[in-house]
Image 1: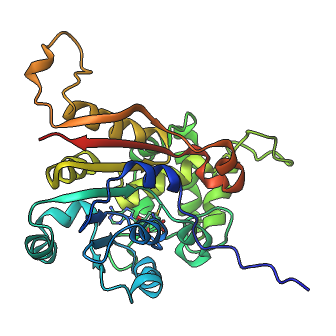
Image 2: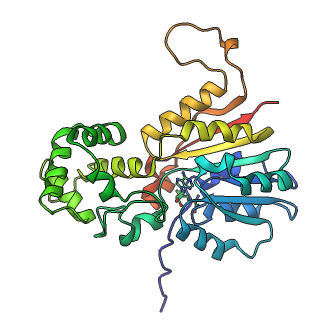
Image 3: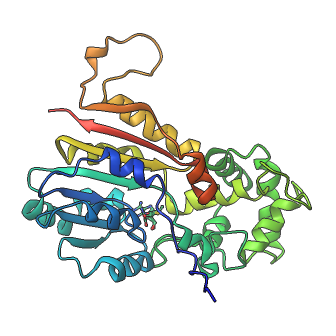
Length: 322
Ligand SMILES: C[S@@+](CC[C@H](N)C(=O)[O-])C[C@H]1O[C@@H](n2cnc3c(N)ncnc32)[C@H](O)[C@@H]1O
């Protein structure tokens, strides 16, 4: 009798494309800004020689512990607890870089967003599919929970966040419904938040193909707001580019259009491509990057079918110029 293997806690997305487009010379220096469960890390390390070094950064203690369980016995691998936007002034990082990667990184990876582990753990409160406390913090040791964040909003500021971070067109009535539920003591769990959304956009009894749950956009927006996911993304990417050695590459995987827009615009600007209004001679913008496959990479049909969370992913890769 065969026993089914347990479902993996997170399947690395666009893995082959990452492996194909990141340079891994002898004695590679690799920085992973979103280590997660170390799926990309494991595959990259398998292609690196004994003199290589891999630094994985994550702000989620549970993810770091699982990555360490997986890769901690590899002497080339180290983990740092930090939000990647705070990395560039972190003394432990600066010391590590000074001793281990003084001439910069060959490869930097940022696989943005949440892991399947975070979504599946009901107690983390990320998903409307699991009943849990309204938390949604990637680092559960710092900052307000989703419930505390919502309690600090007005109708208007909540609606603005739902619109800006979730592209939710019904942001105003949904914000009112959420704050009404809070006032009436009916907002403590993820299901409560989803139910507040369904009072405005009813859920279809049988999910039609291509139709997402009406709570998807609200959950995305609250999660982005609680974790400040977009606020310093452009600055982080620019710092990452500065940390590459000439010929080194930055690979960024994003999972929704808001995130991808910031990645695309930042990389294009650093590649000297002007997207703003009016005319500006291209040479007016310094060229620090070369874009690899400017449209980016999307998952193959096979990957999207095998790992549905990968469907919305897009990988962008850029190479540091001398
Ligand atoms: C999509 S998962 C990465 C999965 C990983 N590539 C793998 O194959 O296992 C994203 C991870 O990034 C972390 N993360 C998200 N934003 C972060 C930030 N600003 N700073 C540090 N870690 C962050 C999350 O906690 C999560 O573990």
